[in-house]
Length: 435
Ligand code: H79
Image (cartoon, rainbow, N blue to C red; front, side, top):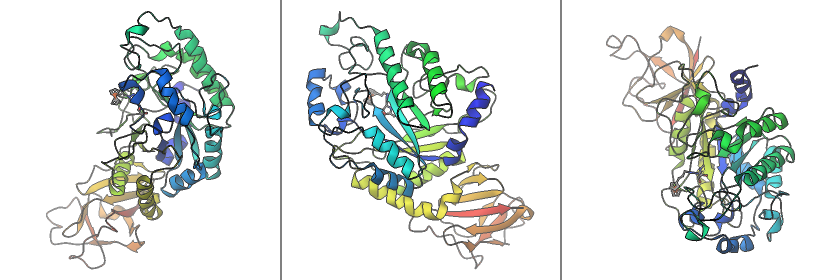
């Protein structure tokens, strides 16, 4: 099988599931200003150690996280097992900078994979390629390193090969010690640190051998804004299985060079921060996140929404609230997301379509003043159901039928005055079964 055929086989579950939970958690939950603190405040290693000494997430209960994710309709999760700060939530034999050596003394990744699997969710691991803790990762002059402009490090000798050996060893541990891993999320290539600079062929070959079914993102080869050779007819072996735009939804989905759709996943924060912050504003509403999920699916992509557990190990109550609201919507409308993709119809003005086989889902984002136009031949439609209450939706003949012969107009039971209300301020979804 070629690289592309193998990819298509691996991503089957991924493109079916559509919705996942991103979890950013590490020492940075303690200073609580986001996961980049050490870099932009240029904090020394010694000073940052105070967070290692303090780390003690007494309320960590990943089963709670898993139930919350599952309730909201998420089918998989991705946990930061090592972010750029280098702190490992797992019990790595290659470092002392790990959760098992803190007050908490637990392998947090082991508990995470057990809990999420128990709820029937797929488990993903996020692993930062760059590492501000390892002595052999770039210091002076590196774009992001906390010591990038510290003169003391001007003549500092590091051996990148030693870091690469460490990084490969840790990836091997993660692919060996935690059972079946469904997804691996690298973050990220940048500047000239791309592809073979990570010894990517060697790394990916090892990973594919240990976890042949694991889905891997494209960031061994790319930064967040690029597609990489996955979009060409001749992808590298480390091109990855999907494109991973962050904090942005591709306007037209993502296509390869021949115009064929590529697997992709847009990730986003709930409140403009990946890591925990004490007083977040800009929280996205459940309604917004549901609409963005619908938009992703309508363009053939996945949506990965982030939560930021605090230093106690709890998902913040505001995030919990949003997820519980999404749960309400999902309980009625799951069929319009899971297993769905881009519909064979152009985007309507009132919202989006998603499609699964002979079922088209109309996501109505606005109230209307009368019958709603579907650009589908009436004879093709077998039945239309409102997923909210499973009530029948009527095909109606409004006074404008002659004006718009290409459209079928639909409405609730009492045409033509009735309109589709938004249910609890959240969008109505209609299932249109085709003949
Ligand atoms: O894990 C999350 C980010 O920490 C990570 N990817 C997501 C999933 C990420 N790594 N690199 N980048 C994001 C791009 C770098 C952005 C930056 Fe900045 C702009 C670094 C410095 C300026 C954002 C703003 C971070 C600090 C200030």
